[in-house]
Image (cartoon, rainbow, N blue to C red; front, side):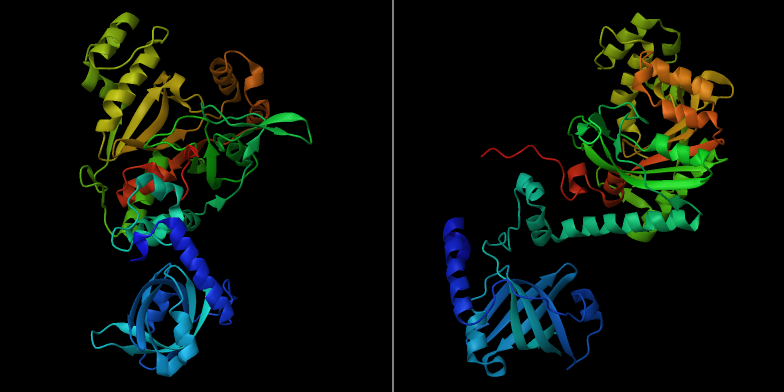
Length: 480
């Protein structure tokens, strides 16, 4: 009946209840309420007649004359409570009927089991802890409007239990990543999120201004160059779970603020990183999800089956065995025949990368390490020993998305300077000279890797959009 009224009428109705509760001596925004545990813990410790204290949000109520059944909900589940006029007194019983769905309630009572077999708390005392002035989404239909779900994630979490399941999984994945790396001797570190020169990736940064020094600053696009400084300084196994920021588009797979795991191991290489990421992802799947069969129903992924293939071999499979021998114009025509857009200013490498991104990457559903990429794509990686035009890297593609790049890290400061100058258009002011200074003091050979946490959570939970695994995704401001 309540939801047949508009929101303003509902709010007025609740304000009236608030006034009456105040008159009855109840504080509308309550006080601390010591609990004996969260609902999952309390249910596990069920003991007939045992007195307990619990608190949660009122989400259902069924009145039966001089008694009332209700459900409270916290972040771990629901518990039924039973109020009887003769047990709590007429004043407290009447006041409870003034509570609205969404209010937070504290309960003192004892366990019993109903005739239907449901664990229930018989209420001896109740307290109003917080008054809700606006209604929760309808208990049957839930919160269906997709945009509203993202904008008002708090309502989404209350109304859609499967959403809480995804974020519980994300929390567990982050916890297990730390456990996995700690067990292997990696040290967790923190590096600057605000930098004078953004480096470590080719991306457009967010700009800000540091008043104290009167200078421009940038939110980081990657922590790589600082983590490598730590390798120079003697940290030989480091990782950072970090937030990166890239001033680029929004899509099903991109959010401008995102979470990365970046790690480096001195004296490792690309192969050691492949082994590490494969073991880590399989461990996460088994411990958090309980299976190596993940992905979506439309594109299931079997994490027991991994493939390694060279970049040029994938290009040849899609664009033809003769593709490598074509000149620039020939490659452009071949790309167009595959449905790719080709800018007139692009070079051969950019055309080939367009074929990879638009025609190949999305087809790699099962775990695939794509290796031996063109050197111009990865300026921070070491050349392949047998071909300096290729770099000793991998891109791990699963479910048609890049999950992790990994490198045999470039530790030659002279070659690194050449690469960064070429990337910056010969403008030495556009790259991190202090990083090159650090390299000249000697960085050990190392393997390095970055793992996109948001995409990894998407894969393991079978979520189809990045906004489904970020609690508060970036949204265009709502028009007033």
